[in-house]
Length: 339
Image 1 (cartoon, rainbow, N blue to C red):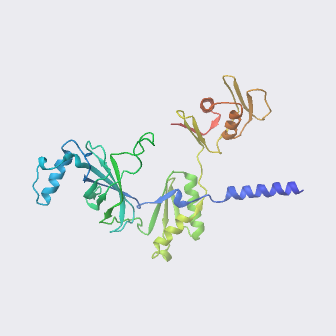
Image 2 (image 1 turned 180 degrees about the vertical axis):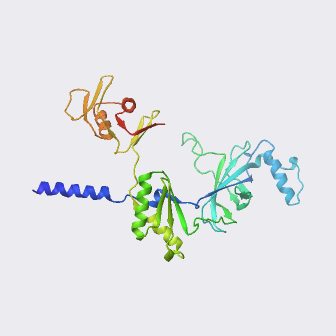
Image 3 (image 1 turned 135 degrees about the vertical axis):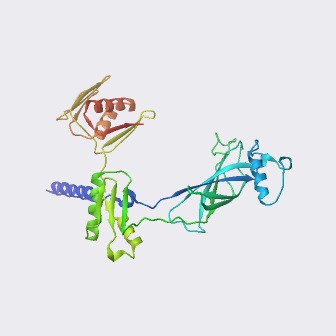
C-alpha cells in the first residue's frame, strides 16, 4: 500500500508540474510598437601611435573637420598614421531618455592596424530618418589581450573598438504602443495553440473578454476602462502572466559537428532499419534483442531511441543517418532541420 500511495503521489506531482504554466508571456511575446533603433555615424579616432590609416581617408577627414573650426591645414602638417576613419554604431533602446548614455562601437573603414589608445572625436549618431539621436565621444578600448609569450593566438580584434557609455542621448523616440485603447502582443514564434492559451490566460486573469487572438502570431488586448490611466501597470501585469507554450516537434541536426538537439515530445512509429551491422526495430513491444540489434517500443520518444543507440556504440554520424532515414520513411513524427 505504501508503494502504491507513493506511486500515486509521484504521478500527481508529475501531473501538477506538467499542467503548471512554464513561461512568462514577456519571454515569448513582445508589445507591438516597443522596439530598439539602430544609430550610425562617421567619426575620426586620433592619438594613435602610428597604427592609423596609411591611406588618405583619415587625414582628409581630419582636414575637413579642422576647417569647421577655422583651421587651415594640409596633409604635410599632419601625421596620417595617427588618425583612423571609423564608422560608429550604437543601439538606442526603447524609452531611452535625453541625457542617458549608451554603449558604442567604432569600426575602422580604412587600413588602420590598431585602434588601441585612440580617442574618438565628437560624432553625431543618426537614425534611419536622418536625425541626430545621440552624440559619441571619448577614449576607445579594444579589450582582451594581444598575442605574446603567455598567450597563443590573438584574443581581441584590433580594428573594432568599444566605448562603454560612450554616447549621450540627445533625442527621444516616441513609442506608440497603445492605439485606440488597445495593445498588440506579437509572438516570437507564431502558433495557434500558444496564441489561444495567451488569450485565455489574459481573459481569465482580468475576468473580462479583453483579449482576442487575431492570428497565430498576434493577440489584440483592450485596456479596461478602469485602467486607462494605468497603462504601464496593465501591460506589466499581462507580461507577468504565465502560460504553457505549445512546443513544435522538431529535431535540429548539425552534421558538421555531429550535434543533435531534440525535444522530448518527438515520437517514432513502427519501422525496421538496418544500418551497417546495426539493426533497429520499432514495434508494438520492446522485447530484448541480442547483440547490436535494438527493439524499441512504438510511440517511444526519440530521446529514448538515441539513448539506446548510444548504448550499443552508435556514433553521432550513425544516429543522424538513422534519423534521416526514419524521417524519409515517415516513422519520425517531427520536423527535421539540418544546419
